[in-house]
Length: 281
Image (cartoon, rainbow, N blue to C red; front, side, top):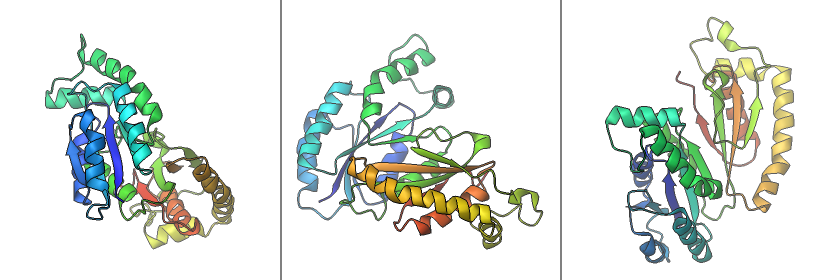
């Protein structure tokens, strides 16, 4: 049976980008369908069908959707489809203001100022964000990075899996990701940035990876963190969590955190999605 996903969130946070990314993955994507039809269409498109890996409903505020109505639809979908989930897209207020000012669009939420409109919408949607199975903060990533994040999260995943795990490497210089569940700091390791021949490379390059991983503190860190996750991941799954995002940070997000995240991918005994947020900075 295909997955069923409700995609919603703050206006300007990237719903259209996510819609295009899911379509590229072969999903059946429906935009701005009246909520009263979502459950019926979800049944028709997912029942006994293997043509699509998933069915996504892109839900915006333009149709006057209320949080209560959306949550009621999500509960009904979950009663019919165990895989029904909510994806909420978010971004900081200042980022949303810049996006709306840049494209000169009118914000769909009525407010005296653009900032008031964003604040009003955020307050209105807070209950949906709290109930979402997955929250993605698009404030620090561009459209191409968001498309990759969606592809890494929803590609080649078994819809029967109870918990999807993703690893995110990042640089503390650019802020801790707001949409992760667990954060590990590897800035205690010697930094390849200060090695002239390694500086232009990244943690995906063998020379950098070996420099980082050949250190005993890195191996100690990996042993401890993987041992922790090996019992935590099943515990999260048992509690019904659908998505678990684990962040590994270093100073710039190009060397140590990337190498550690890639090594953790291999040691965890699962196939988590890996997203290197700041590797190109």
